[in-house]
Structures are given as C-alpha cells and as structure tokens.
Amino acid sequence: MTTTDTDVQSSSNGPASTGPANTGSASTGSASTGQRSEVRLRASQLRLGYGDRLIVDGLDLDVVSGTVTAVIGPNGCGKSTLLRALGRLLAPRGGSVLLDGERIDKMSTRQVARILGVLPQTPQAPEGLTVADLVARGRHPHQTWYRQWSSADETIVADALRMTGMLELADRPVDELSGGQRQRAWLSMALAQGTDLLLLDEPTTYLDLAHQVDVLDLVRQLHAEAGRTVVMVLHDLNLAARYAEQLVAMRDGHIVTQGPPDEVLTEDMLREVFGLEARIVPDPVSGGPLVVPIGAHFR
Image (cartoon, rainbow, N blue to C red):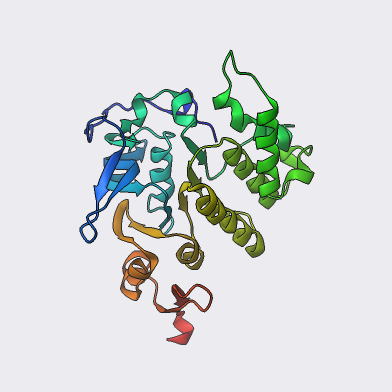
C-alpha cells in the first residue's frame, strides 16, 4: 500500500533519538562469523501510542536485508502498532525509524513508497473500484510528469494479479469480493508496487487454511526468487515457524525474545508471552518446531 503524507501524524513530543548518522544503510555484525549484514529497517528506542495510551515504549529492532521475519504475540501487545511505525503510517512519540540508514520521517513519500510496500490490517478501497484499478495504484510511486503509464506497468500489474490468483477477477469491484479475495487483491497491489521490502500486517486474515498456505508460499517465493525482505505479523505460530527465518515475540509493547524459530518457540516462552501451556515437537514437514497446545481438559 502506498503511504501518503496524510498518513503521517505530527508528534507533539518529536523524535527523542536520531539513531546512527545518515551515511547509508546500517550494518550489524555477527559475533560468531564476523560477517556484517545490511540492516534495511532499524527501530531505535521507539515510543508509540494512540491518544493517552502508550502501546510501545523503548523498543529496539533491526530488520536485516533478505530475511523473512514474523512478529508474534498476544492480541494488543503492539505488533500492528510496531508495523505501522516501521511503514511510516504512525509517527513515533519518541525514538526513530531508519530506512536504509535514513530517518524515514525525513524522506519524501514518493521516495519511501519506491522502497517500502505496506499491506495494512484493514485497508479500505473506494466504492466501485475494480481489482485491476486497485492493483494499478501500486504503480503510482513510479509515475512522474515525464514517465506516465506504460506497457511495462501493465505487465507488472498483470504479473501481480497472476501471482495471487486474481487475474480472472481483475474487472470485479473490490467491494463485491469475499474477504479472502479482497485480501489477495490488496496483496497484489503491494506486489505491483515493486519494492524489495514488504511489511504485511496479518496477510492471512480472512483466508481459509489453503489460501493462507498459498499466500505464505508466495511470500517465500518472493524471498527466494527476488531476495525480498519481508516483515509480517502472524497469529498462527506454526505457520510463522514454518515460513519465517526470524521470529520476534512481543508482549506488553516490548520484545521478549527474537531469533530463529527453533530458538524462540520454547515452552517457557509460550508460557511467558501467551500464558499458554504447550509442548514443542518436531514439525514432520519442515523439521522445525511445532506448537501443540494443551488445554485444561488434557492436563
């Protein structure tokens, strides 16, 4: 989804920290290998909220290039609020977000939209807008007075519709689609935007299990074939473990733990973050961790 200037509300407190100097993409070192990886997004001491309510306080997070990261946690813990701030849809009350080493709030809307695509949790389309027209809006950041709509744009839109299985519904109004079809139409628009960094807030919402798997297969395909960096909020822990390389577990506006799924998904973490009694067993398909909840009836 293309961000607009009106998406960014001014903050009365202003940024409390500017983070690293704007000298290009930040890097993070690996103690075990000595290698350095490019950081595409960096949140530093973020303070986020709505009205009088503070949701996130003092959060730090690095999103490394070429990774698929899933943010997990109970309802109301700040997952979507964090994603909105990373996508410049919510201005921080304090702290900063760096996009490729630059303060995202200092960048132009067009500049951000050419780098970063955002699929919000509950996007709304104008009444009567067709699927094709919606997806075509993903190309707006690439239009200028000297570069108007082209056959290349047409091809990109058609490819995005084809990848999400929406090509046959291109002429149907968005407001006539089912919830799952609507979600795939919005994902098509994010793909048509052509960015190599995607933020997806619950991309499997309204989808049945088969289509959830289809969408997440697509995410992994985009990552594998084009090296896209993806951050997504997911509720299904087992799908998060299977499709993400990195998990970020949140509770009460803070990051409790983060890392590869087999390090993050532990019985102690599930108890601390979700208040859930569960067993972790090997996933027979991926070999990674599989969460088996234990209800009171079986204790």
